[in-house]
Every structure is written in structure tokens, then in C-alpha cells.
Image (cartoon, rainbow, N blue to C red):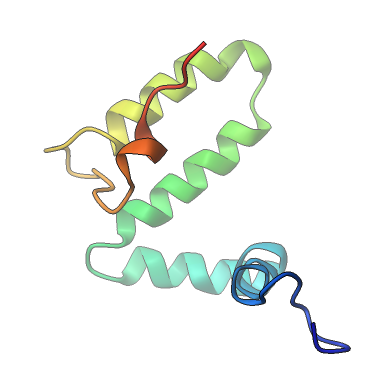
Length: 94
């Protein structure tokens, strides 16, 4: 990549990741954007819940995952994240 840049591999993904995930102010602004944009609020809510899931105790994970699945991955629900692929929302196997 370019010297001094924040990109690795082909750039785009890592640059987004650096700006909107790893930088606290960028992350806050991006979350606010999601929450305020029509149709994107569920994405903002899902992100917040996934971060909470990351922090939760191992024992709570199955119950929390089921709640997430019901809230965000169920067609017809108010917060259904219809932009996610079937592969992204499939229950884990094994």
C-alpha cells in the first residue's frame, strides 16, 4: 500500500475498518449516521448488540444469539436487517 496510509491488502475494507470501527470518533459518527438514516437504524442497533455480544460471558452467548436472531434476522420484524445475506444470518452448524 501507499507509505503512511492506513490501508493494507487492497485498501477499501481496511480503510473503512480503520475509520469507522477502530477510531472512536469515526465509530461514533458512523453509528449516529446509521441510527438517523431511514432504513439503516436496524443496522446501528445490530452493531450495538453485536458489540455487547462480544463482551458477554460465554454462558450467556446462546441465549443472546437467539435473541439477536429473532430481533434482526426474522423477516417481517420491525428491525429485520434485510440487507444481510442468507449465509450471514444462517444458524451456525456443528
